[in-house]
Image (cartoon, rainbow, N blue to C red):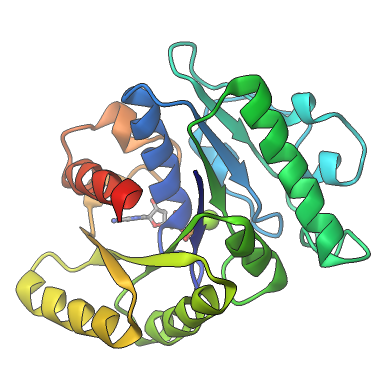
Length: 243
Ligand SMILES: Nc1ncnc2c1ncn2[C@@H]1O[C@H](COP(=O)(O)OP(=O)(O)O)[C@@H](O)[C@H]1O
Ligand SMILES: [Mg+2]
């Protein structure tokens, strides 16, 4: 399955979530690929201890082969990442048409599926309403929109959710960094919001100091598996594949 992760604002916790989620799936025996398509502000490489040279950007510019940009951070897991490096263009503006960009991304997916026999590919998308995020949403089987309960996020989440309906991609909403207290009240607010939108609620993840203190240098799913964040992530992971 192709799973994309979006947000309206940056910093909602998308990269952290999908990286931990991908490793969690791999720990369960699934074969997982993660692609960082947020080439304006890539982040995935920080969370994994790998030395990388070629990235998605080099492949999109036809400067290397697909096999040069796939990295396997863990010996014991069927888990692969395609990192990105920061550049001014986005994945659509590198091409003459969005169709060309889409074909190039699909070429990567095809290659990974054929050579690595993956169960799921997770895409980290650039924040905001932009062509590259929508292009990935368009090719995904399922889109997850990560939001906080901040009003600035909520408004954009509403727009992103409507976009997913127009594109015919089923979207789920995930609210991250919710305050630990008043969780019943917050549950009611987000459930009501999702009902009005006609979008399913994947779940809530509370603000967790353990995650905040990683400074994106490590994955809690590997080093702090008992933390609240991981427990909430495990419940959401089950829901994500069936909802
Ligand atoms: N539930 C959480 N509790 C506390 N900090 C979090 C949580 N989720 C993510 N973070 C932190 O928030 C920051 C931004 O997360 P990141 O995943 O890079 O966001 P995005 O990819 O949406 O821009 C990181 O420092 C990360 O460790
Ligand atoms: Mg990010």
